[in-house]
Image (cartoon, rainbow, N blue to C red; front, side, top):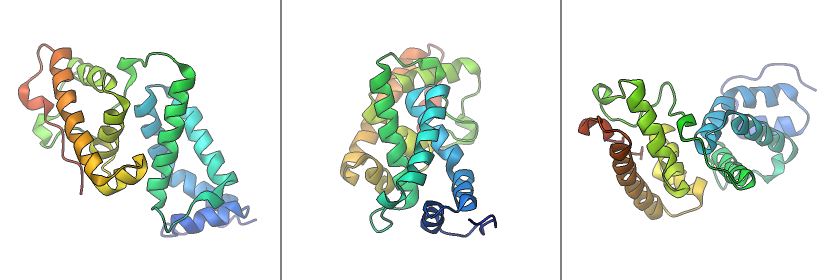
Length: 203
């Protein structure tokens, strides 16, 4: 069982294979590489710290015990990981059968929905309104805004995660951004028109 740290450039698929064979350092390397990504996506999808913690744990346990399910020929490892988090988040929400806490959605400390740094959210009241607006979106729109506008996935990558065509992703994302603008305006009486311009999804 290896205890030797693996180089930073070691491919994800290679680390996964090593981890499945019992290499704990390889598993630790994967965990360090993706733990925050998994947690933040789960947090944004569920609106719950506890749910995000549970889902993060489930994802990495599944990676360790079911490594053979990943096929690098079908999708990049990151895309595969987002798909796992998406499915587990949806299952968690169905199990909980409760309303999401709209105030608990986190847009992230370093990410933004806005093109121009000058248009970033400037106060807590506006941030709360944006969180409420995001929380009120149907999940099929919210997940794409989180994937593309917050996590920077391309249309192609997001399509692979949600198992839809690129055209469907473009359409849903366009509609989702429109709905987000409308809900944000209704959630914040003092919102500035320039503060509701979401960023374009990376191509």
